[in-house]
Length: 261
Image 1 (cartoon, rainbow, N blue to C red):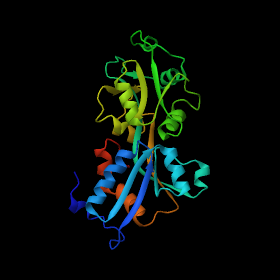
Image 2 (cartoon, rainbow, N blue to C red):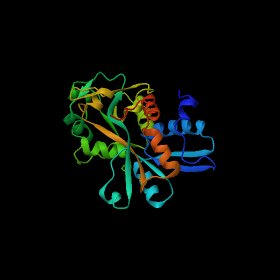
Image 3 (cartoon, rainbow, N blue to C red):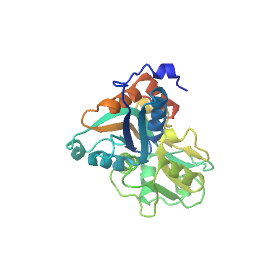
Image 4 (cartoon, rainbow, N blue to C red):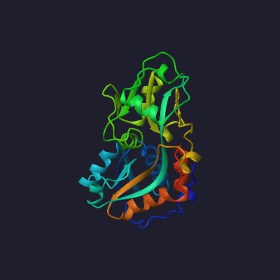
């Protein structure tokens, strides 16, 4: 746990007045933002940082509308979003992990097998060396940055089967897979550390770990972002600087994600 003495080394630009910001978006980034906000406010009790989830797209829309100060995102900005003055700040690395129930004997799949499962072309675990059981596919809603990463890096923009069951957060995905021995889904790597009843599969023979994310050998890796409208100022700048600092990057690792290179 961070000590107040360490946190106080990140002195904010203004201490004489109370300051407040709202941070909203990605459920992948959510645990990092919540833990960092709690650490910051313990050291700077006059500051208030409100953190909410909702998904990357929801956070970015709120930032454009002016109803939040920072949008958390697990995907890169689109060109039309950049044209509206949005600026992304890399705060961590992540792996999108393909997960199954802990009892599933399958230990790994190829990227092509994952794609065919999520397209609905492979529908039984026996087709990939598992038991003779129907595969139940779980996916995320279209506003999720994790969904967009999966769609881009795994599906190559091809459609996920309409039979897939949709979950609204990484937490809901873990809960669904842990309760269904036939299930398959995907979550950010930080959600695996405390998860019970699920396991991540090797993809193309590579296990998702901090090392394979950093060296690029795990094929479904990405940056995580905090996004601002224009260059950040005041508490928004202080908070982002803190998350990117050595103290903040320790929080990133404590939450199960991968620190910046």
